[in-house]
Length: 111
Image (cartoon, rainbow, N blue to C red):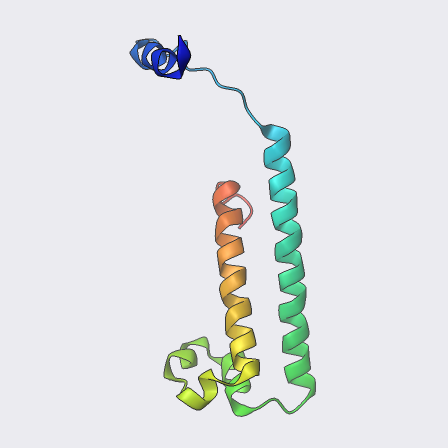
């Protein structure tokens, strides 16, 4: 029989009664818990960087990032090579990527 034949039978069923598949609820929950933990750690790191910048005299590029993200588009080459700026941009990008995946997996119920 094989998958090709079985897929054909399922696709041809007009009532969709054969369209039954196993769920992977435990694996899905585990994946979400893992992703949630990763995002929580990233959030903690972002807060730490923000507190660090607030408690110390952060350079003007970091201060600009903390107050106006649209200023990122206007960063000059010097600022883009600033390790603090790079670290924050990379962290923000990583958070966005992980959060997008998390939101998609939870059907945006927890975003």
